[in-house]
Image 1 (cartoon, rainbow, N blue to C red):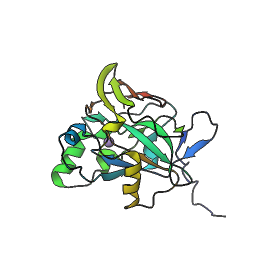
Image 2: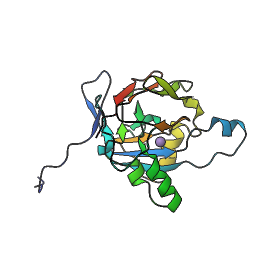
Image 3: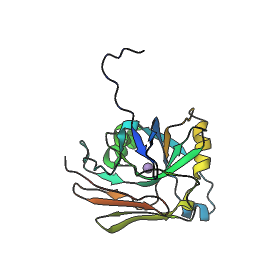
Image 4: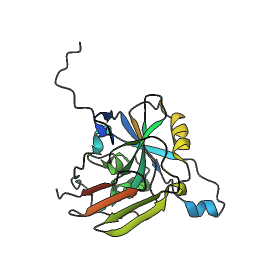
Length: 217
Ligand code: MN
């Protein structure tokens, strides 16, 4: 029996469609720049995927609305397919997620060759819908995001340079990926700003949609 100095924080988790059990989240890996259908059709060699991470407690779940973060004047939406790693180490579930990004801080970090943590891994930076278990969504499924009903992002899952299974294999070259890990698999073109009060709706055909309103601070 461990005697904690104070009660440990609750385990972040996702609801599972059709189940009363929840998926306990261990950590969140994210892939950068994974959609470039045009580059592929032009015959460009595909670049190795690169990863960054968000803390598990950056998740915003169960239909909650995230609060507009401090220290940015340019918060961006990135709709993404989220893969959830199950007990056997394979992808056990899928969800629609939004990789919220302080784009101004990311640009400054890129400029100076500094880490992305403050740009990507901030509190409430990972709104995520419920998990759908089972097989990969149809690769031709549409992935979309609207802000206040206006279309911003639209693509197809097979626009991904690296498929979910390939991304999982690549992530294993770098981490001991385990049950409870989530992987955000990158975003199609059309990223843009979200303002306080904006209504964001993100969809992937075959999965439960994700929607939230950005709460003013
Ligand atoms: Mn992203």
